Length: 590
Image 1 (spheres, helix red, strand yellow):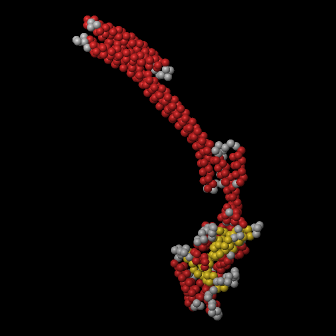
Image 2 (cartoon, rainbow, N blue to C red; image 1 turned 180 degrees about the vertical axis):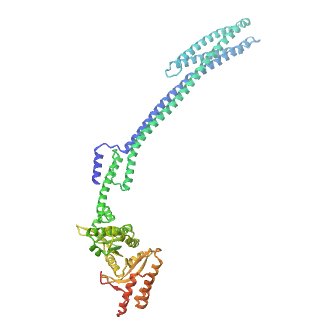
């Protein structure tokens, strides 16, 4: 794993790395650049539209307004002129009124001339302005018409001057002679003025339509540019995102594959960023897991895989001197091994033993037990923390024992096939002893060779109980502590109170009958009658005890423990017993 990290560090330091931060920054910079370009184009288009609106505001509208005001002033002048004519021929003549009206006529004449002049100046400015979108030909023609309008106005002013002269001289005859010419000049001026205004209005309308069209084009350009920018941005961002996400998905897929046990997984490193570093670290981790798996696979054949796992993950345990814990220990042994070994070839014997050990080991593994060792045809196993729950260890051990007893018939049926014979197949049986108590658990051995095992009285007691089965003709015996820890889950029958070799205190031993709720009523009745027999036996009520044990045989004729006590009672009753005799049976053999 360290070597993998060194390679990663060399790769990181030896080449330019494109970190995820730089990639994200690049995406943001690109999108910002595109957004800036769109904003610049929109601003430029908006400036053009604003320039057109300014041209309309400062040229066309003022020109049209000036022409309209000139027309109004001309009409006002005509009205004042007619009032002047009326006032001049009125008797008596109101000279003050005449003077006032003449002044107003002159004033309106000048105002009309000034408005026409203002319109021409605005048009001339539009022609000179290169930013203006107006048609220079149309504007030039309009300016020419305004020039002619001024000439018509000059003609009208000349006739008007003659009229005013006639009015000043009170020459009514002269006035009547030239008033027709004045009306004709007025009509011509009005007609030309109306034509000029109409043409100016057309130009103004065209200018507004052009401005609106330009505005619409600007909006369309903006939408098109925005769509293009978004498309480019999304495509680039999507491409970069895919480049970021694809290796992450590979990592996820690889992690799931490793979780499923595919330790041959190797992912390609396709980038020089953090994801590439993570992929490299992942590959190094998988290589390390592969190495550990090989270790587990190799040593798992000699030690329980959970012990191997614990030692690999917690190397400090290698130096452990052991811990004292309450554990449950089981010994399982094959009966009939000696006769079997004498009657078959070594190859066949090994096949039988391997089949037996494989068959009887399975219930132990299924119940969470640790197989400590195989000693010939015997199996030593234990249950307890950290491998199983402390409160469940006795129940699990009993479950394994019952499972082994349940597999015995099928194992017997397989012997002819394993041995390759059909007749004279040796009879094989089994004994199981289970005990719970304080033990020392840990690595036991020398500096050169150690074994993760358990040691203590519970181990010795379990071994003794396995052998005690021979005395009582039973298959599965457990200690009192085991029975106490598992009594809520299983039915038990007390067999005897014994003193085994190497112990100073007697031990009650129990036979496991089965799971609670699954034991046949006849078996429960047998246990009840047997318990009555034990009580009478310990009181030295031999007749009562004999009757109880015989009733057991009436219920289950093949019950070996009852036969043992029926054989034992005549011997005990024929000899004097100590006053403190409590029914404990002393065993002289291990």
